[in-house]
Length: 481
Image 1: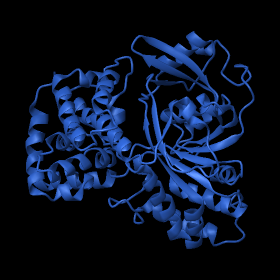
Image 2 (image 1 turned 90 degrees about the vertical axis):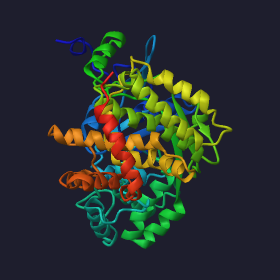
Image 3 (image 1 turned 60 degrees about the vertical axis):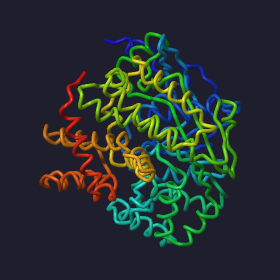
Image 4 (image 1 turned 45 degrees about the vertical axis):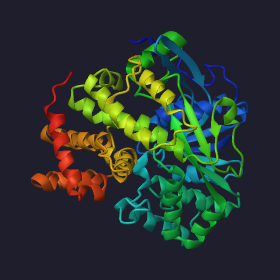
């Protein structure tokens, strides 16, 4: 019997907390990052006790079931190089299965709800390579049919009954926004907190694009009443293990099934309008700017790009965590090479790149944060499209080789091939079928097809493919350190 089985289960009663705040934020994508980042900023805001979050899961209900049993409470473990600190988090006041679209619609339609925040991952936006809605995606097509059935029937109510329900994140939100329109609840903000450049534009393309196809009148209402807020988010949040559950039981004296471990560092930059209001996140350290693109690219290229490079190259060399990969001189040199290319394509003023790089080295080296490469490696085709391709494109346009960025793509290809050779599937929801089709092709066709999944131009460029072939040989022949 563990310590967690012999002490009281965490709840608002056992923790003797204040009553929950009213729901004013609805969140899609209930995962560890949201709980370590947006929920943390909301709790620490000067007016945080006025802003409750109702959070919905994505693909599975597990996290919602576990949190609902604890009244939304959980423990945040900040893991620094010299020790841990513990904070009881109370800002999530409701936790729901994402498939419960009726409850989502009811909450979004409430006049007291001011915004919807998103951490749904890049793949869940269901966008084509040109950034528009991928209307040919079977999941999107199924949502179009379901949403048309809803919006074309005056007898169907958005708040329940036997109505059909959308399945994708954008589809569920379009259904909920239709309920808000019908309720006359007024404007609302959608705040994308996903790791992709121009995430506000992506959210608009996914949500507005879907609504336009389903019902032009609904699309026009959403265009006039929904603002899209772009963000750059940053806080490393590795997967929780049983060790953290036992640690919280020992240190805090209650049984918490859902603690979250994170690093002490956090950053949140936001740009956009909040027509129905927002918490005072600035009092908790968030930064509001007029133009977010340079901040997005600094984060996506330097932090996330290095993560992706280490996720594939590091695993090929036998490493399991970011700290282990960075301690490998070869991986460290490859990261620095990529960083040099990325920095060359960012503004020299205002972003303090040298200090940012130094902070990343320190954060990545924190061996007490077990940030697993296998977790980072998921959904690589979408991630590389945002992290490697722009830097490579800019480097080539400037007459340079872009080898550092290209090595990231080569490492992904080598990783896919290694997984296939071992009989293991690649965790890449958006490209699983394309990857499977590419893997049955012969020789050079296989390489071109795999690279084309990431970027069609790179996959058809003979010079790029030749350079990739050399990098693949380097990655697969270099001994692990």
